[in-house]
Image (cartoon, rainbow, N blue to C red; front, side):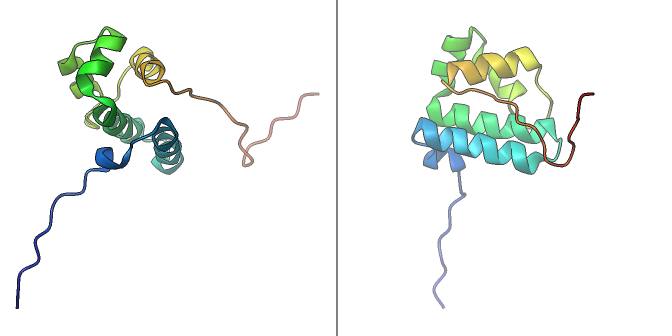
Length: 105
C-alpha cells in the first residue's frame, strides 16, 4: 500500500481577505468559551497571515513581543489586543447575549 503524504494544516494560509480574518476571529471568540489564550492564538494566526513584520511595524511592538503575546500560551494585555486588531483593520464589537438579559427599571 502506498503511503499518503500529509502536511500540517496552517489556517493562516487560508486567511486571505479582511472578511476571512474577521470571520475567523469572530468564530474563535464564539468557540473560546472564555479562554482568552485561545482567542490570542487565533489572533496570532491572523497576524501571521497578514505578515508578522508588517503588523509589528504597524503596532509599534517588536516581532518577538507579538509572537509571545499571540502564541496561545499566555493571555495578552487588552491594549496589545486592541493595537493588533486596529493594525489588522478589524473591529471588536460587543453584542447583547441572549442568555443574560438585563432590564432597567
